[in-house]
Amino acid sequence: MTFLKTHGRGLSFIIIVFALNTYLWVSRLNQSFLNTEVLVTSLFGSFILMSLFMTFLLSTKQRLLVKFFGGLDQVYFWHRFLALMSLGFIFLHQTTASDDGLIILSRYLQLGLDVEELGELSRNLFIFLIVMALFSFLFKYEHFKYLHKLMIIPYGLGLYHGFASSWVDLLSFDALSIFMITTSLLGIFSSLYMLVFYQHVAFKYTGVITEVTHLNASMIDIKLTFKKKYRFKAGQFTFIKLDDKKIMSGSHPFTISGSEDNSIYFTIKKLGDGTKELYESAYVGMKMHVSKPFGHMTFQTKKAAHVWIAGGIGVTPFISYLRSHQVLDKPAHLYYAVKTFEDAVHVNLLNHYASIHKNFTFDIIDSQKQGRMSTDIMTINKDTSVSMCGPKPMIDGFVKSIRKMDKDIELRFEAFSFTGNLVKDIFKYVFNLSKKTLEKLQQ
Image (cartoon, rainbow, N blue to C red):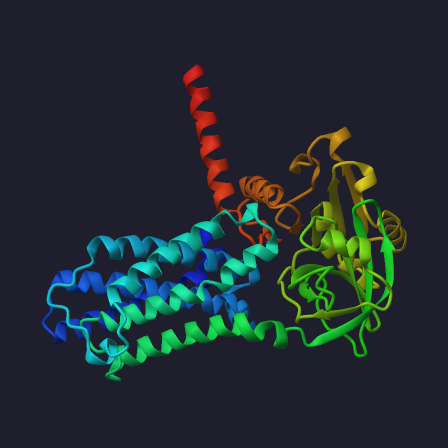
């Protein structure tokens, strides 16, 4: 039930696409009196194209898609899931493929291309790029993006292979043909949009840095001022890019940590992939291009009180909420975990808000002195809304602990990684499972 509550919308969209695809293929192939072997081969081949069409479509991060799926973290979840599904369908299609009685239409032969060789090339490129993407946590964020841009090559080859080697003419403009053409064009246009147009049309807001504050040895606070007010909700994040590619190439996501008149703030931690250079080189007068805001952790709730859980730089959405609200209408307590007290940022700001807002209180947990933060020190019940932001392992741990306390407690978080954590999660799961098994054997 928890999975369906979190991922239900995305799952329903994917099921509908696959169900419609299956119905159209079965109906069309039955009309042609082709056998079961042909049906299975065609279905698995079409499933590859459906998975990739939706993978590319989700990569565009269009507002309606993000809203329907329930947030950008859900879009990224299903984006990765569909990419893995396509990999599985590639192996199934290869295993079941049959070309018995297959006739390539003359329009495809005129180009002099070997359709089967194109299919194998497409398969091999897909496998290579998807496997590389799974291990993307080993690469820089920018290299990860370049890998994604190359995906259009095997996708185009795969589409040509699929249309040329189909047992039915997919350019006949019947129901199946229209469906396949439509999804294929959407997939290609989505890929081209991300490859060619996204960097030019997505960053329509341009601001100038008017303040730069180095908070500590690893974090910086930037005040960005626009000609007009940049509208967002506290807790949201945005993508930024710079004209100076030596400081930061490409776009990167950052949580907005507050606003003031026509200005917004970013609190950025020096983590590499441009953030180190930004920490060292940001200056007053620098231009910064900003996308629309994303995120659904906006603290809107009918519960009586807030509990906020932050780890490291994950304190930024809560700082944003405090900076954006003159009055807190509900009690809010922040639990802020840092490695050492010196790593905590905006402590003076937190103290200031605690002094002027009777509804706001906070605790800073020094992990080296006090140990890891846990739910044992927190007051959480059905009347509280829990919002969390921080490293994914920390958030995953708290989700598990709070669900054990009461599965109906209201939870809000966006613990996703833009380069993915799937392989790391698998290794962690196998390690923990092996550890538990070994412990049981020793008892």
